[in-house]
Image 1 (tube, rainbow, N blue to C red):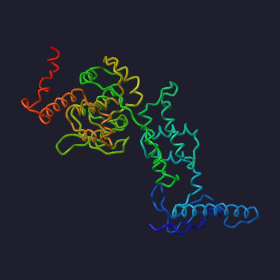
Image 2 (cartoon, one colour; image 1 turned 180 degrees about the horizontal axis):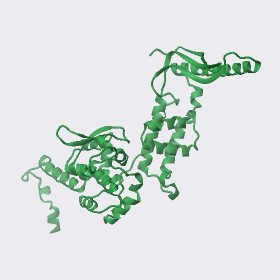
Image 3 (cartoon, helix red, strand yellow; image 1 turned 90 degrees about the vertical axis):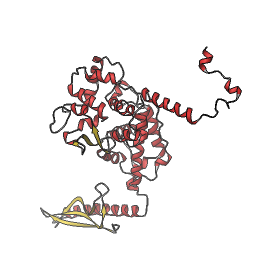
Image 4 (tube, helix red, strand yellow; image 1 turned 135 degrees about the horizontal axis):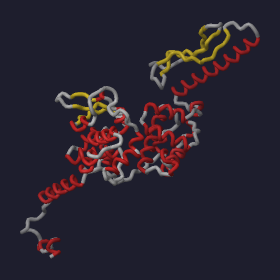
Length: 398
């Protein structure tokens, strides 16, 4: 598109003998929010078409001055952007408003990061205040911040959560720099927060069977939890899952076509007969009607207690179970598991889906056999005497 060359202040007649002031862009400017080219911008400033006294004339003169100031500012902004000048007015803009405007396009984690950042800057921050030092200090803040949902209990935010939040914040900075809202690419000077490998609990096959045979106060919670075990869906995707999302494949099987709320990736996930049986009779609308987030707290703990499971298990662990018990332990390749779980990369899946002990033992036996065949250096007769005379661990025990 041709670059905007002029910004003209114009008037348009409206009712009651008034004129509406607006800006005329030629040949047009692209709105960064809608990405549509616009020619006109209403200023919501009105003047008298035919002033009849000094008061109305003075009013018109005052409003025209303000409108002209806005016109000059808009044209200055276009020139600054065209020639990469620093727009001082833009730098004084509200960074928090810019951040907040991003939330409706992003997942729930962005809302948590936004709230933490608001607390950190005391709910005031302009674009010119977004410096390397401020961003580094925000990273330090996250490492000692309290969980938003448990602030009254003083529960500290986990290091891995802090790392994820800081990564999201750095993503915002990248977008802001791309939009020329901040003067430098702050990301180049920021170090990521390293994650730590944390052992997470997951259910064994016997425990899953025990839960299936244990009554739950909320049947929909039981169905949704077991469904997550068989599909790996997150709670956010479970809550919005509809019958319309289930489609029939060419081979006669069924699959879920879903865009993950967290990663915004679309996937087609074949589902088993066991999983589909948990959905109940085919209907329309939401599959797990009546399910809500409050159920995955105390009601879930009570159900686990009745089943005699003492592990610290959350609803998210059902997804973790899918990555271990249902897929990896059955020999499904890591790349396939990553796609099935809607992950953006294998690295995330490696952290998320731990290998079961059974799978590790099988792989280790296979590795030992391969090493014995491929890395054998000496035949017994050729082996040096000092090596042949070394006793094996079994001989040493004798």
